Length: 261
Image 1 (cartoon, one colour):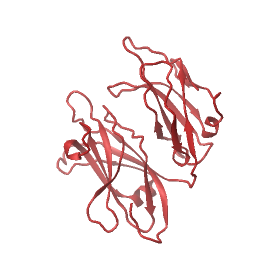
Image 2 (cartoon, rainbow, N blue to C red):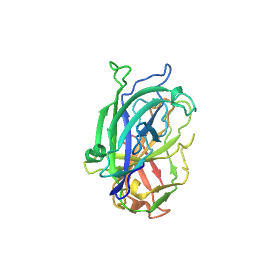
Image 3 (cartoon, helix red, strand yellow):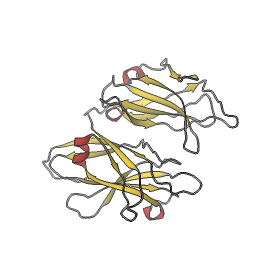
Image 4 (cartoon, rainbow, N blue to C red):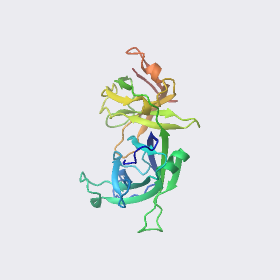
C-alpha cells in the first residue's frame, strides 16, 4: 500500500472470518472469498489489494490467508472488505454473487485489535448479510521461517460408505484466551495414515515470533458439504515442533484417538 516518505510505519497482519453469510446457491452453500480493497494514497478510486482463498460450501468461513499490510501511523488508510460467492474460476467479480461489504480504516482495526461488524449491501438494505470479524496484530521483526512436514496414523473411519480425508488447522493463542487460525493444510485424500505436504510459514505470523506461544491443532475430516468432522485436538509450541522427527502428539477426542508425528 502506498504511503508517504518519512512517516513511521509497522507491518500488521489481518485474519478474517465471517458468520451467517447469505446463501445464494440453490443446491449447496455459498463458496465465499473476501476481497480487500484500498484507496491508494492520493487516489479517489478503490483498488483490489489482496484476496483470501475461496472456501467451499460454508456460510461461516474462517479464512487461512493472512493479509499483510504496512500501517502508516500518520496517514488515514481506507479499507473495504467485500465478500463474494465464487461460482467459477473467472477472476472478474462481476461474474460472481455479491454477499456484502464492510468499510473501515486500518487505524480503527489496529486500535480495536478484534473488530466484528455487520456486512451490508446498499442494494438490499433490508436483507441480513451476516457479520465479518477482523483480528489485527502488529507483527514482530522476526524474519525466521518454520518448515514442517507432518504425518498421521490410526485415524478412525466411522463412515458407513467412503473414506476419510484428514487435514490440520493450526491456531495461535491470543491474550484473551481465544485462538486465531494461522495455517490450514491440504486434505490427505482417502487415507487413515495421512502424509501432508511440507510447508513453510513465517514465525512472525505463525506464533508472533514467540517460540513458546500456545498453538492449538485441530485434526478434521474433510466433508464436501463443508460440515467437516473433528477427529480431535492437540496443543504444542514452535519450540516443541522444532525438536525433530521423534515428535509425536496424540489427537485427543472424547470418543477416539489418533497420532500425529
